Structures are given as C-alpha cells and as structure tokens.
Amino acid sequence: AFDRKNILHVAEHNNNRVVKWRQGASTGILVAGSREGYIGMDSTTFNRPRGIVFDTDGNLYVSDSMNARVQKWPVRATSGITVAGTGKK
Image 1: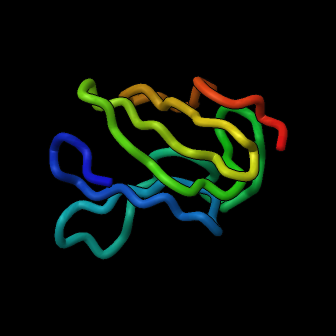
Image 2: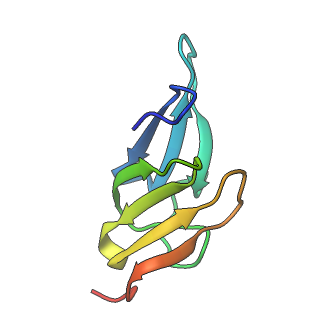
Image 3: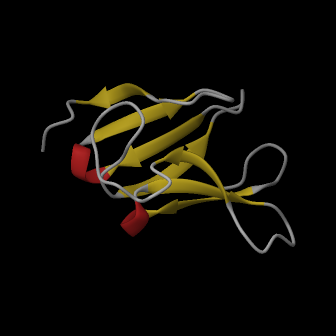
C-alpha cells in the first residue's frame, strides 16, 4: 500500500512486520512489528500480516491474519491498537 506521501509499505507475511520503502532505497525501514520477525500477539507484534491500508489521516491498518484481528497503528506510533477481531482464531 502507498501512504499519502506515495511511499510504498509492504506487509512482510513471513517476517511478521510492515516495512516502508522509499523510492530508490536499497533497504526498507521498519514501521510495525518485530525487527527480528518474531511472531506475537501483543500490541507490537504480528502473526502473519496479510494486508495493509491507510486512512485519510495517515493511520496504518494491518490485517493480522493468524491473530484474527485488525491493528491500527496511528501515525508515528510504536504500537498498535486492536480495532477489529478477537485475537483468537
């Protein structure tokens, strides 16, 4: 998904994180999830994120598939907030 500044963000399903890629960059920047790719279900980790989308305010929403929830990551946040789902499959 692209944010409002047209920067690409990728849900890395197998690495349990979201990374942003600026145009021309050779490495991505961690936005959400575990830097090491750890699986988790607290407010800072994911278990197989599948999709992402941004709202008009720039907040990031992550479909955390194996945790059966959607996490909202407000702009510049270091953790997410469950806005849908139970966290249990």
